[in-house]
Amino acid sequence: MTNSESTSIFDSLAREASAKGVWPSPKSRDFSELSDPLLFAEVLEIAGKEDSVSLEKLMSESEGLRKTLRRLWVVEKPTMTTIRGLLSAMKNFGWLEESRPAGFKLTSEGLQVYRTSKQNKRLFRRVLAEEMYKRYVIPGWIVSRLLALNPVGQGEIVLPSPLKDWQPVQLPWEHCKWTQELEFQTVRAAETANRVFPGSFPVDVESWVERVQVNWDKLSSHVRRKVSKRSRKVESLDEKPYIATYAPRGRLSQAMREASIELLFSAYQPIQQFQLCLELLEFHSGKHPIPPRAFRAWCPRLDALEFIFYTDWHPLISGRLIFPCAAFRERADTPPFEILSGIKDPAGRSLFLYQPTWEYIREQFISVLLDCYDRLSRRIGALYLSLLDIRDEVCRQLRLSSTVFDSLLETAYKELIREDITIGERVSISLESDIRPEQRSGYGMLRRPAYINGVPHSLIAVNRRYRH
Image 1 (spheres, rainbow, N blue to C red):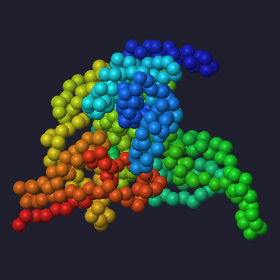
Image 2: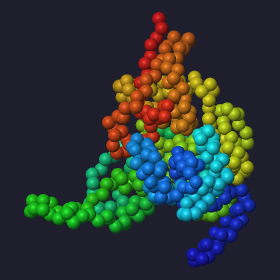
Image 3: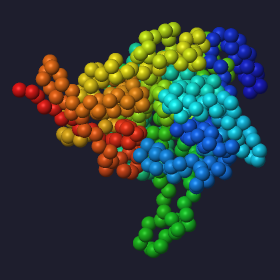
Image 4: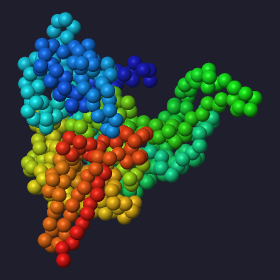
C-alpha cells in the first residue's frame, strides 16, 4: 500500500469515527504554550496594571516577570520562548488582543479573568484548566486514559526505569548493540512495577522489550556530540587518547520512557493499540496525541492544575508514578468532589476533581500520614525524614493532588497537637525548610517541595507522647 493510499484510508476511517464519540482533535499541539499557572496570572497582572504588555516589557529586568522557584532552584527569569508561548496561548484563549505598537492588551474576557486571578487563585486555575482543555484536549483525555489503563488501580500507572541497583560502567560509543543484559533489565523494570503496584504497567513483555529495543537502536544511531579540540588533544605520551563514551543506564532510561509513552498514550484505546480499528480510535486523527517531548511538558502543568499527581522518586519503584486526581462521572457528592462542567468526555460526562475538605478527610489523612512516617522512620532510622517521600506515598494512597496535600498538611500543622481519646496519644508535627544534602544537586533539585504558608518545606518529624 502506498503512502497516499494509506493516508486516504486513514482519513476515511477518521471521518467515520468522528460520529462515534471520540475525542476531538486538539486545536494546537504546541507545548511551548504550556506554562505554570503562576506565570499566566503574573502576565495578567502586568497587563491589568499597564495599558499594554509586550515581549520586551516581560523580558525587562525592571518591569518584567519576577524570579520564580522551579522545584528547588530559582529561575531568574523565563526564557524568551516561554514568554512567547505565554502570549500566544493567552491570545488564543481570547484573553489578550494585539495593540499598537507591537504589544497586547486585555480583552473584556481577559479583564474578567485577571480579576478572578486576583480574588480567587483556585477558581483561576479552574478557568485556565477549561481553556487548556478547549484548546489542547489533553487535560481531559489523559484522566480518561489513565483510568482506562488501570481501572482496578484507579488509574495508577508506572513508566518504568532501570532499577537503581543497576549501575553499569560507561561504554565506548561504538559498543551500543542491544544485549541480553539490556533485555533482562528491561523485563525486570516492568515486572517490578507490576509487583509493587499491581496493574500499573499493563503492557505485555514481548511488546515492551520490542519497543524499548527499537528506541535503544534509534538513540544509538544518533551522531555523537562533538567534543572540543582540547578534549581530543593528547597532551603527553603517557596520556591516553580521548575515547567517546556513553552511559548505558541513561540511554536505557530514555528508551524505556519513550517506549512506555508510545505504548500507553497513543491515539488508540489501550486494549489493542496496534490495530487500526474504528472502535479503538480515540481521536478524529490518528496522530499521536502526546509524544514523549510533549509528555514531559504536560506532566507538571497537569499537576499544577490538580488533574494528576506524578513523581519520579517514589521510594518503592524506579520510574515515574502517575495517577489521576479526577474522574469523569454522571454525578458525584460535593464535597469531596468539585465539578468542572466545561470539561466533558465523549459520553458527555463532566470531570470531577477530588477536593476533600479538612473536615471530610481529617482522621484518614492523619492516620495515613503517621503510618507512612512510621514505616519510613523504621526503614531509615531517623527522626527528621523526607517530607517529599512521605508526601508521595500519602498522595498515592489517598489520591490527592500535591496542592490538596499542601493545604491539608498546613491545617494539620496549625493544629499542632491532636488528642486521641481512644489511645491517649498526643501527636505533634514539626516541619523544616532545610534542604537535605541529596536535594542540593542533581535530580534532588527537580523535586517539588511541599508549600506551607507559601514557604517550601522538605523535612518532617513526628513526636508522640502518651498520657498516663
